[in-house]
Image (cartoon, rainbow, N blue to C red; front, side, top):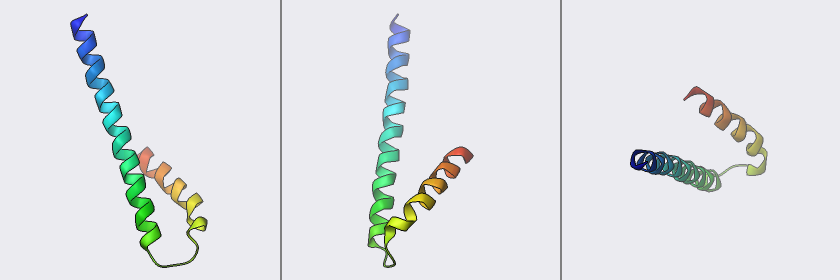
Length: 59
């Protein structure tokens, strides 16, 4: 019982940390794209999501 609870806490913490890291990376990437000079960034969104899906599959 105690082991199950601690294991759940560890797994939950890892999942939460991973989500926080992913969100932080998304915010950093968004700010970096906004800061870069260039054409309208809305055209980059589909390409960006494809790249993120591909990079996630490689890990």
